[in-house]
Length: 67
Image (cartoon, rainbow, N blue to C red; front, side, top):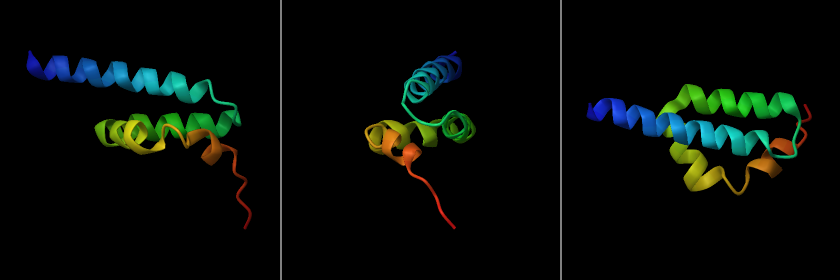
């Protein structure tokens, strides 16, 4: 029962973070990639997003990478 509750909380927080990323003004492909990475990294991705990347995500996604 506790495991299910923890999973549910994680899924709600992940969906909320994905929605926040989707609402940013950035290229769609970069938003999809950021959301995918967050889903794949689960709790580590959530912690990184909420503790460090939340306020910086839009500027990171809008940067152009040149080789």
